[in-house]
Length: 534
Image (cartoon, rainbow, N blue to C red; front, side):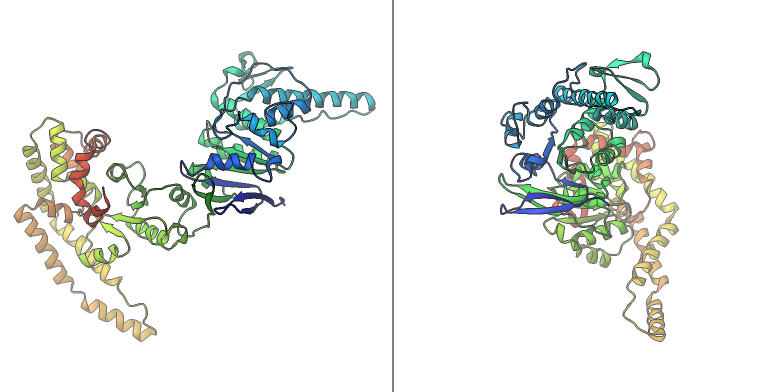
């Protein structure tokens, strides 16, 4: 079982608080939250500074083609303190040229000197031991051997060739195609650098890594750091990141949200697990300084992309279905860690009666003034913008789209009425009084509820609404009532576009010079949520 490790951290009033963990701590915070400054404090000012080795995000990856070893003690001091003449952590500030938070670290050459010095030292010891022993001895596993093993494990298609005073790389099993270390890719170099730096850290030390994901492909980030942690089980790893995916993937690490830095003190708190919200979602929210709005849909869809352009002052988080949006808003509102945030939900109208909409808004869940978010792409105001951009006749285009969609609604009137009636019945059944006890009470309550649901009347009411919309050619009301995700496809063809390209065109224009006009055109369709849109 791994030994519990301790990290001393400054808190708001300047007092030190000890964080205990088995292997690693992940700090996540938005830009400006003071991550790098905290890493600097841990290295330069903390009471544990003699044990700290910090790997900066600002680092040169110039890999020297060859090196010259020296005394291992001098090589280690030169790497850890910036000069072989320095003797302890009090001199670390010189390593960073008096600016530890901002100076670019250029120590790849020193790392190479250290690794080859260790190689030379261990080989010399082995040679002496062989001369003094009559038995066959096993060669030592040097630090550069460990780098090679792990580097090739992470990059199985490549091979490191360790020479006397240089390192080369080649495709696996093709030594004739070897190339110098200076010709390695950024990924190949940074993997070597990170493994080597962690192996150079003091025994039972604290390794602070600023932006551990930098220059690394997502497929290898967690694998690499988990393997490095195994090499240095004696050390405490401290990661400083704003990458939600990285933080979430470090499943067994203690997570700390770095809220802010006022120039002297940090505001932070441990992140507690929430059964109703996945960890990556919690971390994404904690890393944001914007108000939160949960929406229906999936990342990569045109409707979510449109939301993000129109609601650019919010952190827009798609949650799939309306049920998940509602659950997420309620879970976040109930979580004490998020009381400082404004949290909202935005869902499709989806045949909801007005009394249900009013009830949802009491929980900060707002409803669009269109049946489906896809209907936003078919609003008259938006169609006019697109027609004008395409140098077409906006009036004629709208008339064509309107006629097409009204004809489609008329042809499936029975289906649409049925959907609305079913939605109303479902809502009414959800109002069942669950406080009833006993078989008879529950049975009586159910029979009463069912008897009060007049399907025939509901059907007549909904059919009358649709027939009035059709008769009056009320296009806005059609978009409120008509649930059909393919409306945008029909509008695309009416505008002379490919069948499904209208949403793509709208999103592209919303990302450019038409952003404000599209935002203003669609704002009224966001119902009561529009009061929060700048």
